[in-house]
Length: 182
Image 1 (cartoon, rainbow, N blue to C red):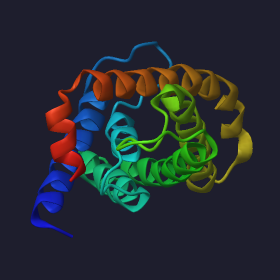
Image 2: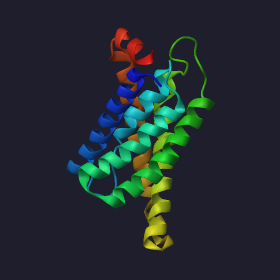
Image 3: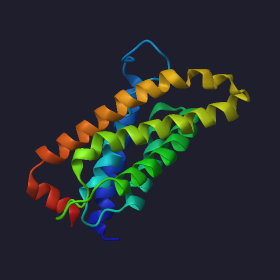
């Protein structure tokens, strides 16, 4: 791995961790506990779709390390457990979704029109990981009653993060994107 890629990876981890931590510190969008947009996933989606030298393993590394960074910033060990289980499943789901959707030619091998769908896949599996963690931590399956509400929020949040990533990839200068890819 080149020094440039290590530095960019560290930057991506910091961006994603800061976005995740910021989101936990902001007032909730809706007055229902546990519902968040998933701003940190914008960085993961960006890495998955940027192309060039960036691979799924890079996105997974950033997703995992951002969970620990966000937990350090917020001081919550349980959020690291929820984030890690959700992040691992979400990254795997987004990798699978990216692989399933049509490809394009050129530097960005994956069609960015499918980013909202990829974001939704990731958000749904993030919820699945968090619900599994909740069942294990609380020792009861009754927490699963909350799943329909969280799934609805995952569809909205995943679409939002996918659209944000799509805009980011379209609006960033091509020269900057080319520099990140190499």
